[in-house]
Length: 69
Image (cartoon, rainbow, N blue to C red; front, side, top):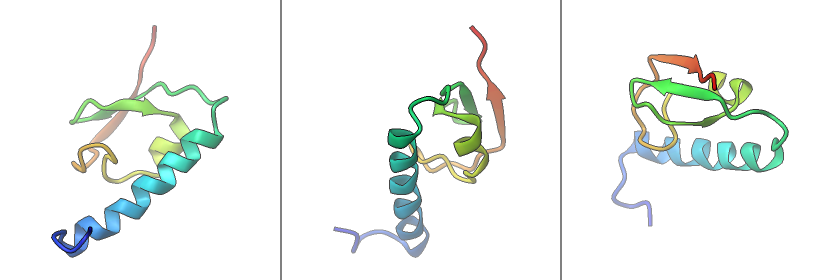
């Protein structure tokens, strides 16, 4: 399944799976962080602070913003 991925992409996949597990366990945390430049959301502050690459689109994270209602 991963034979066509570069070495960098192979490293990202386990990070994405780990984040998936964290979000499943940490349902009490508010998912109010927006990743920039890609604009993806759905992360709590603690999890987003551990990311260097967006687990959805794999772009570099330049900045994180709190979404307010």
